[in-house]
Length: 492
Image (cartoon, rainbow, N blue to C red; front, side, top):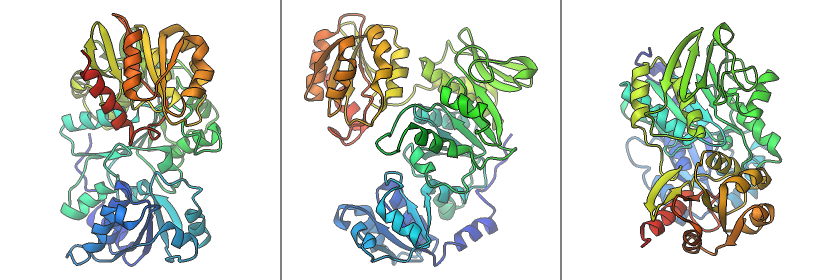
């Protein structure tokens, strides 16, 4: 069982903070993560410069940092400089550069930083240096948010003090800031980690590193899929024998890395939804599988040193094979942290999942309307369609991320009754998949919902799973999902 610990004994935490006092730091990107980082650095006594592609007037958080210098708990200054100024030579002489996830590692400003000898890191790397409780880092192309939230709920139900955040919403550095504010300690930290965070990690070493899957995504940012996959595996590169790697060996990329011995030095806990565990995909049992999870019928079986724990899925509110994988990862992590099986089962019986993730919006006229707006890549759509048991009228499209839509051909032919395509990617998707089902183009979400309703019959499912980002038509996947839900709610 975990004991209550502070996120570093005071002297150690103080030493980490002392290392920042007077240090010249540059925060690149001043959205929510960058603002939290700048505020924390400032309070630790660093000399902070923030920069963003937007003007200061469009960044209220940055302006607030500049205006609050007289507050007693702020020990240093914050200044703002444009990206152009820094790239053109008005360099602030930063010793440390903290880059927000949305800023690509190839940004010319970061090239300037590296040439000037600065340490370039992510907010996750900075935050982890202040952690002295178990850190669970959850990565993968799909399922991160669900797994992170589920594990956080399990720990809370077990009476543990847990910080849940990272890419999920609350910036990771706010965990360290809680200690600075109130001396709050945590039993565990659960962070959702994106590949963007991992691009600039150096010492980051989670006690439990979870890799759910690796499928094509963000190929507009990486040189190829191999580069993207290698970045995901940076999650495990600093792990030692006392750490754990929870790996989905049903994923061919993860299984390949594991077979080649490239999955770090932590203890491996395998999980698979395809029968029992094998060296690559599938299962070893008994003493050959000292720790791992697999499906036996509709039950999840957790094996530890030959002993079995059975988790019947019949009472779970989450459904679909992709969610079984997420559940397996959460069970493995919770058991490593000493959480009782009964607490895990109780949480799973109550946990309903996340908004915009295979969320049933409404049943109308015998048709189910499902919002999976968070499905922003091809892999998400593959998993969504694999789990569908009714004919699907699919709404897809948005800003293309460079994924291969060709892998969807068999699923579209077998499961998609009609396809309504929106956004910048609609023509590319139509060229690739239009021959396999009835296809229509729509100019707006309202148009898409109307055309989907014309094609859906009783017993069908209208599924919004775009397989693309939202930024051509919406501010975020959340706004896209909210618009879809509002339109569905008005159907008469």
